[in-house]
Length: 459
Image (cartoon, rainbow, N blue to C red):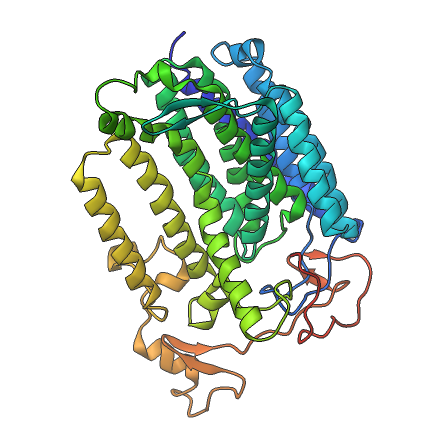
C-alpha cells in the first residue's frame, strides 16, 4: 500500500467543499425556523445570527467517510476496524442533541446525559481505551469498566471544552483546525513512520475534522454569518476526542520498541505515546484556565460560579483594546504554539532548539498581547493586494475625511482613530429587518432583551 497522501487530500477537499456548500442553505433554514436567539448581555456580536451550523458540518463528516470508503488506500480502515462506524453512531447522536438544543435550548443536565450516552455508544462498538502507557512502568491494561469510564470522561471533557471556547466568531473552528492539523502529523508519522496500522483510523478522523472546520470557517469568520451552535461545537469536540481515544487506546506501545535500555531512556521514549492525550489539551488548556479564573472571580465577587458575565478571556482581550479579529488570531497563535510544539518535541525530544523556538514564540505572543493598539501596515509594493484596513493612508486623506479641507468639522458621532475618523458604533439590527448579516430574518422583533441582564449560559 502506497502512501495515500492524495487520498487524504481528496477526502479533506470533499469534506471541506460539502461543508462549505451546505452552510448557505443551512443558514437560510435556521432563519426560517427561528433559530436566531436574541442577543444577550454576554454576547459580543451585535446582530442576531442564526445557529445550526452543525448540520452542514455533520454533512461534511458523512461525505468524508463515504469518500474514504471508496478510495483504494483508505477503504482498509473500514474493513479492518469498526471505529469509523462507532464514530458515525456517536456523532449522529450528539449532533441530534445539539440541533434540539440550538432550537429549543434543552436543559444542561440533559445535554450532559446525551454526551455520556454518545460516548457509551462508541465504547460499545469498540472505540475505547484499552491500556495506558506509564513512563518507567510500561503498558498498564485497563479493565472494561476502567476503560469505559476513562473514555466517557475524555469525550465529555473535550466536548465541553470546545463548547466553552466557542465565544468569538471563528474561534472554536479555527482552534480545532489547528489542533487537528498537528494531530494528523503525529498519527500519520505513527502509521507510515513506524508502520503501525492501528493509527490509521485516527489519521482519517483528523483529516475529516480538518475538512469540517476548514469548510465552515469562511462563513464563521468575523463578522459571522452563521454560528455552529452546540450542534457543531459538540460534534467537532466528539470527533477530536475519538481520534485521541483511537490512537491512545488501540496503538500498542510495544510495537514502537520503546521499552529498550534504561528506565530513563524508556521514560523519554514513552513521551510520543502521550501526545494523543496531550493534543486535545490544546483545546482544553485555554478554556480550562478561563473556567478556573471565572470561578475564582465570581466567587470573590459573591456571585454564583455559574452566573454568566463578560469576564472571559476573549472578553478581556476586547476590553484591553484588541479588535475582534486580533483577539481570535492571538488565541490561534497560542493554540498552534502548544499543539505543534508538543508534536515537534515528541519527534525530537532531545533537541534544545525546539525549546528555544517555543520560548521565543512565547515571548512574541506576550509582546502581541501588550500591543493592542498596534495596526500592521503592508509595504508599498503590496498596497493593491491587501485589504483596505492594512493599507497606508495619506495624511491629507485623513484630514479630508475629518472635514479639515472644507473647513467643516467631523460629524459628532465620529471619533478620531489612529488612521482617521472612526464611525460611531452601529445600533443592533432587530430580527425581521432586511440586512441581518446579508439576509432577511423571518419574524419581526421590535427590540432585544436588556443587554444589562445576562441571558442563558449558552452562546
